Image (cartoon, rainbow, N blue to C red; front, side, top):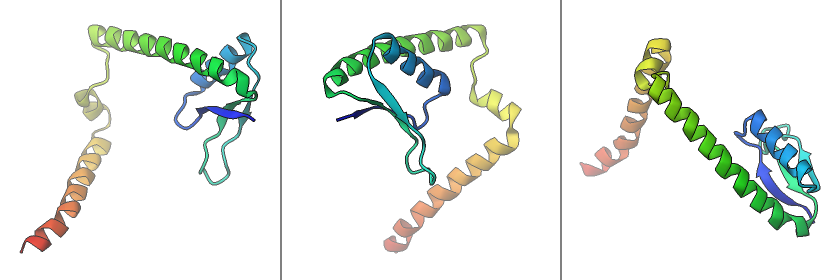
Length: 121
């Protein structure tokens, strides 16, 4: 019976492509399901054979470790170069979105505090 190896929700296309290529390279039988119509399931990459699932999980752990190291190195390079995205850079690039987001956060915190204030007295 097949088992889910990777849920594709919030997975960039390049990562999904690399995972599929890795499985092909190591001769692991897999298939992919498309996202559901209503968006309840984002699709997934499944390993067809139970016997190959543990090996695929090991390959996936190794791949994710390498990808994490690469992403951290890229981020550290951006910080050194001064090109990393910061709150100030976002505020300069999209001030309306940042201000509206902050207002929404304050309103939600206030809305959550209303029951406590009403119970208090």
